[in-house]
Image 1 (cartoon, helix red, strand yellow):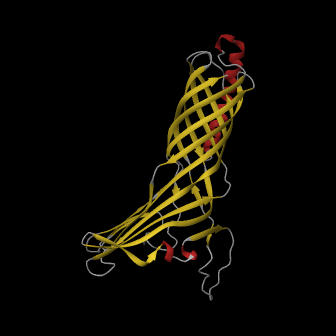
Image 2: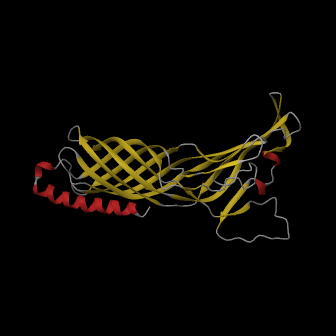
Image 3: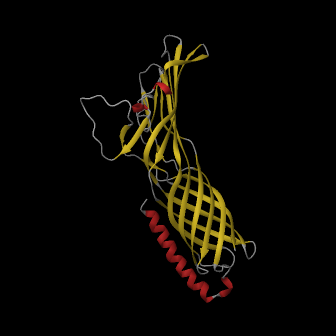
Length: 312
């Protein structure tokens, strides 16, 4: 990802040259000092892919971290595929307020809602067990940035460079495992769980290259390519839904003693930390959250945004 800052530094240098040109030719200018509002939306694709985190600390699924494993019908061979990616793919809606200090430079604060795509992070398919893990991110971000433009009259290029600060939201993990004849011959066991991961304060960065086109003196259209680099540190996780169902001849029944209320705190609440002690001789306290090594969620992505910009 180190190449990204270099790209936008080059863009800033190019913009500086354009500014000088615009100063020599007043007919090129179409932006004045003052406040503006930008409203838009877009879609981001995964970029900067990495391995996914372990999303099954209780070992319910039998899935090896970040893998898609298929065992053939007679169990004589296994196909293993590596899974990697980010949770940064999805739809983004954005509202940004800004101020132009001059026709060429401004500062802005963006508010974005991100509706992430569901991503498979692990799967196991065998004659005895079928299991799968999926994750998706929902959140609100702040995005303070610098806005640079040469202020051309018609198609006006610009660069935005700034920070991404998640302020609300969470990562959701959905887990499913089905064990053939797990409840006896002719009875399958289905385990379903949903977990929520809360984050610590985290900061990423982004850069965008775009162009505006004026409709009138106040209103213009914009389109841009945006690259974001964001790694979110996990704080806590909790299993919020958990049920085990016995399925016989198409009929299902909840299994007593294997529901969310039956899980001890140690198996449904987790705390991420950089340093902790763990006894090798004393059983863990089942009424306390389990300590887990710190994890970071990769939410990087590259996408396209479009919308309108209004200058007050």
